[in-house]
Length: 176
Image (cartoon, rainbow, N blue to C red):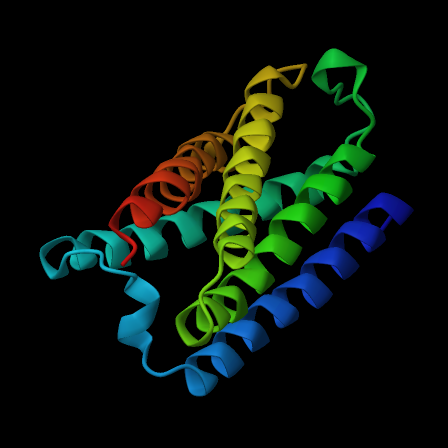
């Protein structure tokens, strides 16, 4: 395992644990899980739930692909980017994901414009990070082939739809 892989693995293990912990603590500390829906109509919550599972699976596949790509010295990122861009984008994505539920719980108990801006900011940053990762994936050269690459494209595309559209745009629209 090279140093990029070790850093990437550490970011994902620590960040992943912190995200999951924030969800568990946030769900226990909040008034109810229902509050986190923020007014999203019940008739589309099932779509959201399925989308969460599909996008998490897609993100996981992309993460495996990315981890393996760190070994590939022939792999060239677009726009002369260094592979450290993955460390930065994953860190932003995981930190912002970790903050979402605690911020929503605070917003429910003590609403404020600053909290609302903070919630919108973390949601937008997750969506933007996923979009940038998708663009990098599509522009990497030489173009990888195989199941893992194709499933990474499909999975990360869905992850962007979920985080960049459903979470960052639709969820705030329904917030009450």
